[in-house]
Image (tube, rainbow, N blue to C red; front, side):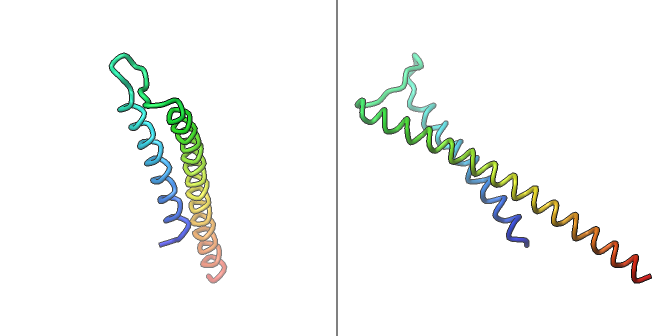
Length: 91
């Protein structure tokens, strides 16, 4: 299996998994009225900063995975066309 394909799949899964985990934590932290509950101001600032940073990292991982997948598909297409051209030249 091509390492580009494996890396793209792992990157996509990690990116979507990280976004899911952050959104799930945020959902379960909300009260029935919709307000987020924190035990202190410092924790709220730190957690919100880490979640925002984590979402950006997840976004970058998803874009990276999509670019790798696109690169893999281009390589596969070029290899397939190269084989077809070589077989035509041999005949």
